[in-house]
Length: 137
Picture 1 (cartoon, rainbow, N blue to C red):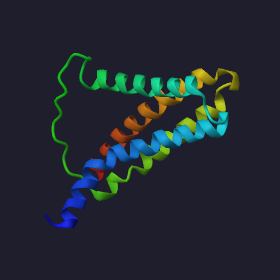
Picture 2: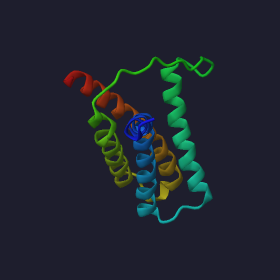
Picture 3: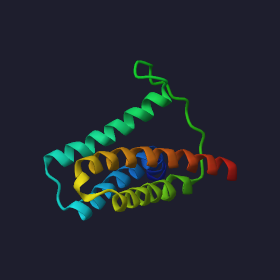
Picture 4: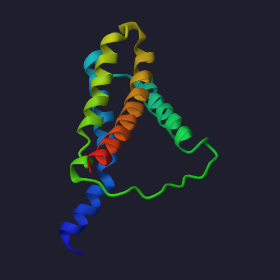
């Protein structure tokens, strides 16, 4: 296999997860900036929020939790659409604005909300990115 072909395949399959990783890491870093290094309860609350957001999106996408996960192959898109600047940056901006708005004494609630918000916002903005790319091409 040619190295460029393999690299292209890797990047195409990793791009959405990579953007999500940056979103989750960035959201956690924003939480640490606002609240200092979290203890176990805050970490588990953040993870719980992320799982809740993912579960909500999965239930919507697959019309419930007991449905089989069948996905049609997505059409090819422009290379620039794999960078996910809008979805990652937008999700982090929403998280940052949320952190500014949340009262400091609500830290457990905030960690849950940020976990859910990062997941939901990234995925919704990812849909908008895909729609925009289809419109442009």
